[in-house]
Image 1 (tube, rainbow, N blue to C red):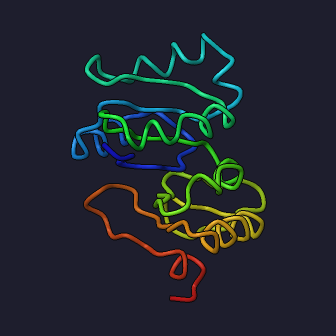
Image 2: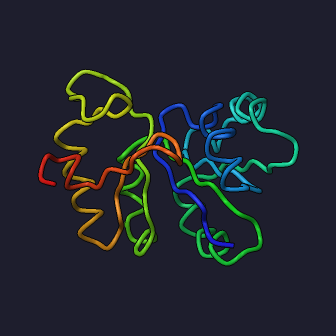
Length: 159
């Protein structure tokens, strides 16, 4: 099955992802792409507490994601891929061509402006997303499957 969701969400594995997205998408696997967590067994163990036993959890580095991405796309498991930040999307842009990236929970921080109630971006993050989109990736924002889907142009105030 293909990757059923590629999402940017600072909280990574949490109820909204597991129940809100995982249930409707019938996810078999959740993959967290994060260099630090890929090297931290105790953090992985903490994140796994939020994953039901019927869903497999994996933790890989960005480099590991580059290698495994074709297998996730062509394998039998319905996979949700989670990254913590826009910078990681930029690092993975070349493997994401033809895919959709969902912007989920990116919270307020210094330098970030509110785009949607659940989405705050810096000008630099907007630039990364425009570059990713120019490379053939569809960038959208939606907090849950039944919510309105916003295009990158709409997020930038151009749509």
